[in-house]
Amino acid sequence: MIVGLAGGAGAGKSTLATALADHLRAAVVRLDDHYRSTDRELDRNRPDAFDVPGALAAVRAAGPTVVLEGHFVLALPAVRAVCTHRLWLETPPDVRLARKLLRQSRTTEPPSLADAATRYLTRVRPGYELHVAPSRAYAEVVVDGLGPLADQLAAALAALR
Image (cartoon, rainbow, N blue to C red):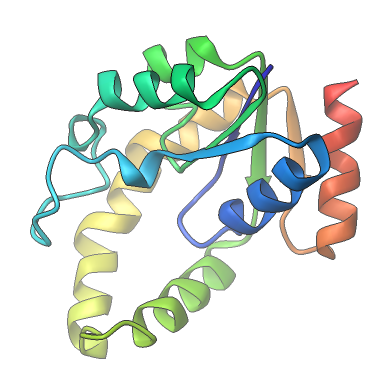
């Protein structure tokens, strides 16, 4: 079983993926670990940013039960095709942006607010609107990303039955 979990950046995918994997005794494969480059200037909001063969190899190596999470999981046809279940974590854009800014502020070299806002407006938001948001249509179930984690987990598990 391969559970694909997608949603916008900052939706809470990693948190839900970890909880789901713990419950299922599954491995987690994070699409964010499979960019073609680690260059900070790489636009990670485009489909061609990903090493799709590498991601698929990681899924195959991870075992029989895998939670595959990332904002492009449902947007990349080859990745979407290996998912036996497809979930979307729906979280409002303002909440996702706030989470992303908080996460970036905790890094060793946080961007300035101006740089973060510029990147969001020129790359993150356009990439989400063009590539990620339309992939929501491929989800079998939409999980509310604002609810408590226990409710998100219950909704995800119900979808797997």
